Structures are given as structure tokens and as C-alpha cells.
Amino acid sequence: MSSYKPPYTITNKILKTVSDIVELVSELNHIKKELATPKLRKKNRIKSITGTLQIEGNSFTEEKVTNVVNGKIVLGTVREIEEVKGAIEAYNYLEKYDYKNEKDLLLAHKFLMQNILNNAGNYRQTNVGVGGEDGVTHVAPPPNMVPQLMKDLFDWLEHTDDHLLVVSCVFHYEFEFIHPFSDGNGRVGRLWQSVILNRYKSIFGAMPIESVVRDNQERYYKALEEAGSIGESTPFVEFMLEIILKTLIEVKKDNVPKNVTKNVPLKRLDKIVNLMKKDKNITALELADKLGVTDKTIKRDIAKLKSEKRVVRVGSSKSGYWKIIEIKNSGEVNDK
Image (tube, rainbow, N blue to C red):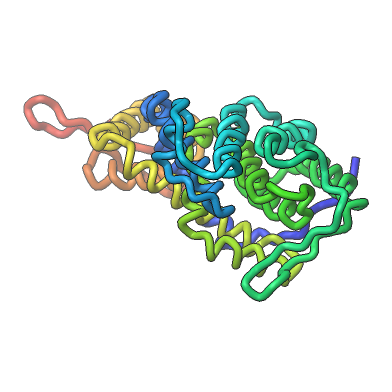
């Protein structure tokens, strides 16, 4: 096992964004069935494919990608059409990849580039540089170093104990730094971050993160360059976590029925009261664990219960207990 650990720092911004993402994922998990419908999954998958290809200069719109998915004839260059077909095949396999398996990543590259590159699915044998507006902004490691660098990266991926939200971002940056393929590195890096996120929570399999990256493309490249200039992935991790959060917010806004989001918290409030009835000494952390939400969400729910005069806290937060306030049919208040 390699002792390699990519350089990055867990900042307050990273911790805050991870907390916000976890909370929002918990909310969306309540309506997971609605988000997992074949129609919605297909729509968001097409957004992902369109976004990741447009970042690389492909001109196909969501409508044209949809037509390719549906087997219709579309007008475009041979390369653009093959890029779309390759991305469709690679993303259709998203839930089947083992995110810790280097061979699966090579398979993903083969899917993506099989009709574009002669060496699809194999690491490059030549030197490459990453270009920007001011010329070459990054000279990738020489080809003879690539196999060992990728092995070290996957060894770290398998053994790290860090949160997968952070890990997915670090891997994305380190992969782009190594630039292991002669072409298709951006597409594979973004795809593999989605693979890691899907392993964290399956709900991410239907999240069009790549389309939000496309909408923030200039900042995406700037974050990559900034991380490269300081020698650690921290700026890129902060940026990508922000993108993940934005994606979840947009999905919730565009696809979650309003009546569902309103009903879910009410059901949770009733569950909290019932748990407090069973154990008046139960803590906020224990409530969060039992209900599968963050402690921040539970604290907000308890504040709401207090404001509605359904519960009160007797004594301190450490040594006190919960008292349930019940209203009888006559309107008389009864506390327990």
C-alpha cells in the first residue's frame, strides 16, 4: 500500500459546504422516489452529458443529445456525434463502476473515446501540456510516471477515511493534474467524480453536476489553475463543493413537488415528539441519527416545536429533559 496522500487542507469553508450538502441530501432523500423516476433520471443524465461535452467544445445541445439517445438521425461532425455516443455509453454504466477500481476508470475512458482515439482505455505514451488563454498553463508529468501516479492515487482512494464529498473533489483535481490520457481527461475526471458521489449517495446518480460546471466554466478552470499554483487542491475542492451544492439546490427547485417538501418536515416533527415521549432524555444528536438528518436540521425542528409550544426543555441542555405539551379536544393544555 502506498503512503501517498494528496496535499489539501480542510478549511472552514469546506466544512460548512459539506454540512450544507449533507443537510440538503437528507431533505431530498425523503422524495428519492420522485427524483429516481426514469423520465427525470434520463433528463438529468442528458444534462450531464451535454454539459461535460460542451465544456470540451462540442456544440450539441440537450435537444440534439436527446435525439442521439433516442436513436434519431442528427446533423453534426463525425467527431461530435461519436463524442455524444461515447458519453452516453460511459454514463449509462455509471452505477456499475467500482470507484476504487483503476481498471473501471480505464473502461470508462474506452467507452468515451473508443471511436475517437486509437489508444482509448490506455494511458498516454507522450508528453502533454494543458493550454489556457495565456498558452500552456500546466505541463503534465511525463508518460513514464503516469502508471505509478495513478496507482498511488487509487491506493489513496481505497484507504482514505475522509468524507467522500471531499474525496471526490480531491480525486478530480489530482486526476486532472496527472492528465493520464492523450485526450478525454476532463470528461473522465468529471465522470469519475460523479461515480464517487454516486457511491456516497445513490441520489447523485441523477444529479447533473456537469451541467452546472459548464455554467461556471471560467471559474472551473480558474480553480484548477489556482490549485496548481499553490500546490494543493484546496481551492478546487472549495469550488467543486459549491458546484455540488448549487446542483442540489437547482434540482430541488426545479423537480420537487411543492406539497412534498411541505409535508416532509411536518411528519418529521411528529416523529421527534413521539421519540421524546418514549425517552424524555433523548439528545439532539440521537434524534438526528434516528431520523437520518443532520444535527443542524434537528435543532431547527426543535426550535419550531418550541415556538409552536409543543415541547419545552426543562433544565440545561446536558442534564435537562423534554416535556411534551399536549392540547386536549377542549382546548385545555396538558404537559407531560
